[in-house]
Amino acid sequence: MTSADSSVAASLAQARRIVVKVGSSLMIDPESRIARTAWLATLAQDIAALRAGGAQVIVVSSGAVALGWKRLGIERSPQLDRRQAAAAVGQGLLMNAWSAAFATQGITVGQLLLTYDDSESPQRSANARATLGVLLDAGAVPVVNENDSVATEELKLGDNDRLSARVAELADADLLLLLSDVDGLYDRDPADPAARHIAHVPRIDEGIAAMAGGTRHEGVGTGGMATKIAAARHATGQGRATIIASGRSDHPVSGLREGARATLFDPAKS
Ligand SMILES: Nc1ncnc2c1ncn2[C@@H]1O[C@H](COP(=O)(O)OP(=O)(O)O)[C@@H](O)[C@H]1O
Ligand SMILES: N[C@@H](CCC(=O)OP(=O)(O)O)C(=O)O
Image (cartoon, rainbow, N blue to C red; front, top):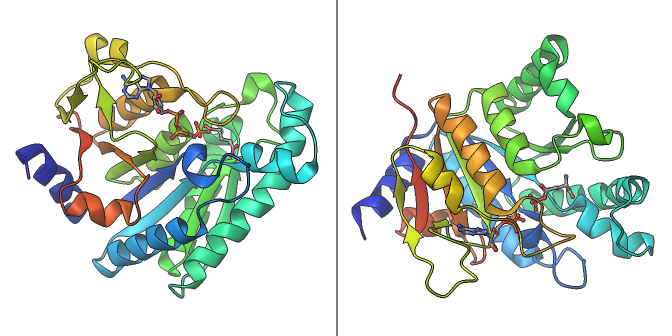
């Protein structure tokens, strides 16, 4: 285990309130069904273990749009009304999957659907904060997504990486964990075989931001590494450690506690 790995483990062990963001590519299979029911159960077990260690956990889950296409029986399309209709179908499927996964741990889930203007409005963000607080205190796991079916193009956050940083802010979390299909930041898109993994980022500067490219899952993932770095910048700037890690394997969080490779972004010093 390297020192950066142990810092990832230490950050997880120390955090009292954690936002775990799960990308679309982890939730679905190439046929656009909930693919990874067995995997989701292992993540729910990991989250139950974090809670048993005294942490509170909020999930931000993507996948509604990607899941909705197939069930609704329409072709994938960039058109807003079609994506919104797909999300209306997929969001229910997504919550069923989370609800079933956490039920195996005896944990109740509560759905929060937020828009950009909710997070900008003092009144609505105060309400969302209070709802999160009651859910957490009652022992539930809040599962958050963007309210894709109503958000207009101008008022969309548009990606759940940024949404998760805003949720971390709303909930005053001390750790943001972004689970993706890649085990952290590389010095260039890892599609390039020469790309090198970066285990530790003490400070996000323009050089770091310039390394991050887009997604290779057009129509499934949104934003690629660039929006994860934007989220990490937002969260670390507010003093929250951020980890980007792979969710490809079973037990992705306990894997990190045992030294799996990831990228740790230090919180900014005040
Ligand atoms: N510098 C980089 N380091 C790591 N991944 C990168 C980088 N630049 C672009 N990417 C791409 O970002 C992808 C992860 O983002 P994305 O597809 O949006 O996933 P998610 O659904 O988890 O949000 C990676 O699979 C990779 O193709
Ligand atoms: N709110 C959208 C997720 C958009 C998004 O950011 O997706 P991803 O890049 O996979 O985290 C959905 O549920 O389909």
